[in-house]
Length: 110
Image (cartoon, rainbow, N blue to C red):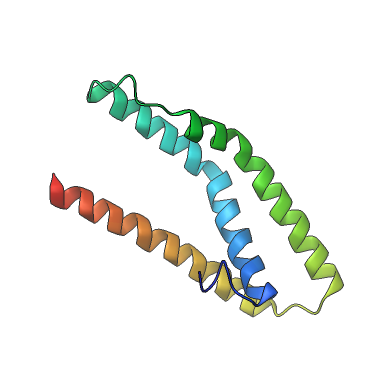
């Protein structure tokens, strides 16, 4: 929330750009593949995946839109590039922390 929902447009733009490009690099496809594997190995063939498969198809557009937003911002404002990089990396660190925590919880309960 501090980064992605920041009142500072520079910070929220960097966070959005980082997350959308991370997701567009294969996150949703990997998630769908994992759910498909889980469905098959746990005999959960009825587990609905429509939300995830649809979102995977939409993700490239999200990255394109954040690229367009970034270009409009960058070419019309004075941008602190170091702040952008630090904010984007901090957002990706948050994404990593979330997935690490989820993985640690998975290991704990199995």
